[in-house]
Length: 262
Ligand SMILES: [Zn+2]
Image 1 (cartoon, rainbow, N blue to C red):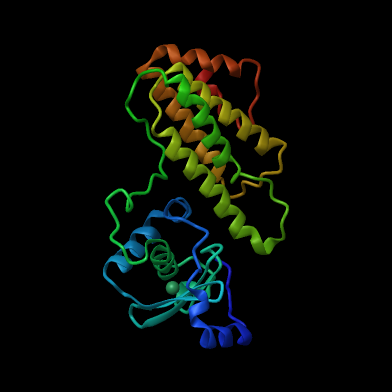
Image 2: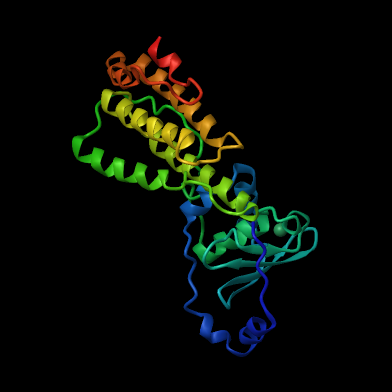
């Protein structure tokens, strides 16, 4: 989380022109929040949101401010552009961690106090096999490829200064979470195996030559879970293993291909 302070001029603007901020809208949506927070923080934030602990929510200059009731009352500010740019005076917030209060206020900015459905509250950040078997409808493949490309963009080259390191690691996590949600819907089949494998080979290239700095091991761990998914595909539909031929004569960055070619 990056701290964001209102300058005295911004504070003054907030006081004299509150009505000017009615058009303030978040650039993020609920999916963005769900894909970029861990389960514990997200569920706690949902708890805060649902128990109406968010008081005095206001649209202010470039963002949202609120008071959140907890052990004490916390003052929270969340930027309209990115909820990672925020400020909260709780213990974690002061250490620049993304805290549950900030996430709860971000949820309010998106939901406007409306009830969250069961699906709204469910994250899809863990990769698991859908248990389905069957080829993907050819019309859907192009759409899926587009979504995979979009999700993969979060797994980008690192060339920033150390102060945006956390943000960069969050971006890698968000990319892997978005890909996990997509892959968890796939049925075991040749077409699914090809989609997953093509993505893994692209990620592998990014890791070995593309300047992705995976020091936290997020992408590596994701690749390993995908290999397990491919093994599940092979068990459920042995013909899907034909896609693994793409690995012939390929040496990957940490030998993840081995369980698929033996
Ligand atoms: Zn906080």
